Image (cartoon, rainbow, N blue to C red; front, side, top):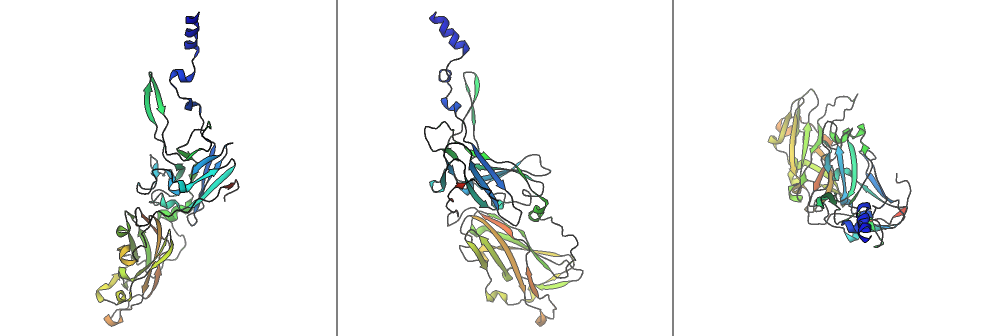
Length: 355
């Protein structure tokens, strides 16, 4: 009889521990709602994490944990937008954790170009973004007693129960609903068409390319001076004559050239024939005070060119006026002498409309 009872238990099913399975298999993930709102190319985006469960959870709120999978029109595979290894955290920062009670939320504002640094090929009209917050899942597949078993990933975790005896399993990351970008994001892709705009007669100044720099000393930008008119222009143009406005993690900084760099030189008067474009690459460390780009993060840069030299002393009739770029270019700094700028997490609040 004892033999038959043991055989029946074996056939009908034994407790999970007897089969070598962990009690953790019965644990469920926290009920977390994660969403991202895109608010147009001229405004910062927002994210919100809501605890929809019945237990308090401890949430990592480090803004560097945000990343995206992007489906770009015309490309078969999704692109992953994530901070470079130098910036992406390897563990939970205790300074950036909060306790989310049930039906409480944490919100954060951000610029998506810090994560999708090449917006011209990633954040374009029609792109679909799947937002993530946390560390990527890294499950390992093993075989146990002839069965394929996927082991749960280990720490760090973006969310876990406050109560250590809770049945909630920790989460590596949370995923939000996808968002599609509207046509207004053509401003970031550089293909926006201004219909009906009259063709200008003056030269135009634009920022054409930023850099994904390892450090401050290697940060560069490309500035283009173009003649869109049907007549030739002469312009006294040198990189030292450019003034940059830099909006970075620490606020607005203006980089102005010294007065000695503004003395005219006959060889610096360019002949801009109709449709011609001149591109100049500038190392920002040569034009801005040291430390301007000393903090890792995203910097938005505009340029102004003051053409004050008419070339009369050289027999020229050069263009005189001020040219300013219409849209900034982004520069990302990966490492620096200062730490990555992060504000302390805001106190979670009861759920409300974040928009």
